[in-house]
Image 1 (spheres, rainbow, N blue to C red):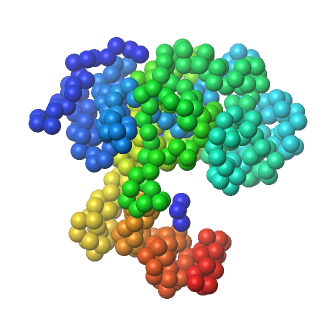
Image 2 (tube, one colour):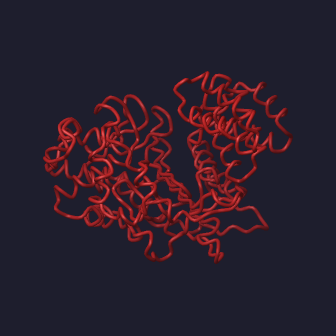
Image 3 (cartoon, rainbow, N blue to C red):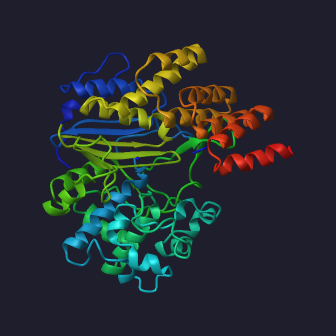
Amino acid sequence: MKNFFLPIIATLIIACSNEQPVTFSDNHITEINNYLEALEGFSGAVLIAKSDSVLYKKAFGYAHIGHQVKNNTNTKFSYASVGKSFTAVAIFQLIEAGKLSLDDPIGKFFPDYPNEEAREAITIRLLLSHRSGLPNYFRSEKYINTSKEQFRTLESIAPLYENEPLEFRPNEQFAYRNTNYIMLGRIIEAVTQMPYANYIEDHIFSIAKMKNTGNFDADHPTPNAAEHYTLSDVYPNKLQKTLFMSGVKGSPAGGGRSTIDDLFNFATSFKHNQLLSATYTDLMKKEPESGSYGYGMQFSGGKGSGVYGHSGGHFGVGAEWRVFGKQDYTVVLLTNKDLGEGFLDARFFIEKTISGATPKLESYFFTKDVINAYLKDGITTAEKLIAASEIDLSELDINAKGYEMINRGFYKKAIDLFELEVYAFPDSYDAYDSLAEAYMMNGDTKKAIEYYEKSLELNPENNNAKEKLKTLSVS
């Protein structure tokens, strides 16, 4: 089932030559650079700093494939959900100023909000931590199937969620939803009587010296902006521009554009309490007791690692800023291809190099080894590798690779990868569902029916399998 301003040490930012290896005074940087240089198809820009001094800044790939324009270190990339960082800081600035409270309900600012339960029970705290229960407008049929230029303002998005039922009772569970941050943006506008974009420009971007960051309109020219590319659903194994797949304008939930320098400036300003007092900076940096998402902040390095920041991902977008507190590194990573086209490899390798291996990282790279073993030597070799290893395979990552193969039109390879998923996770209904889809795409209706039925046996609530079986039985 188909399922983120201090002086540069110029002597360390060295243009790489293909003829001789480049070394840096920081061994971590040498190792990371060598990995990125060898990463096939990687497209984006990377900045790494230690103790607020930039050690590494380099661009890879193309900003515009059609015109063969290369990315550079000043290229503006979409930052997807990284924009939630700015919205969260803005909210805490207003809390610090006494204009808001974490426990203010949305009804305080919107007394006529249509849903009474939402009006009274959803607080700023719940919006910040994605525990509100507001419906996911970003995945609604109306949003997906309507021209995105119809949703250029926060008010134009409101009808997509205001009149819809809550997904769950407020504070009942965690569900990452852009809707939460759209609502926070509306609250910022209500309190400040300023457009959201103007507030963050005056109170965040100007303070952090982020001169190349903004919620630009995607359908209007932006100087030195990269195009973003995803695997095409129209032509197998081709790249497709993402203009019609993303929002037409950046918002409080994300989708604006920035550069690696600007995001480094933001991270540095945040870290040194230039955007908030130490009290509220520390509150944002505080790890939640459960889960990995706090108040507009992600904690992706594992419990107690001291790693915080925010990532973002969408079709053709991978973005992240992260501070490795214990090691005193800051990393900014912006890419203009899908997450699986180099972003995740770069992200996890940098994390492993700076802060050490974790079970999650080991699982990711082991799964990559299994996939490569299959592609090189076949499925039997890959199965033996799985059987001989004590490291767990990542079901999420092997499943994603299978769907990449479907998008490329390599249906037999997709079948094999999903067979490996089933081999490693024999009780996973999702693995069988994906395997069935691959067989269906390859024209083998009998096998598709067999595996959809197996998926339904493991999970009788799998509606996707039910719908596909109806269709396949008719055909």
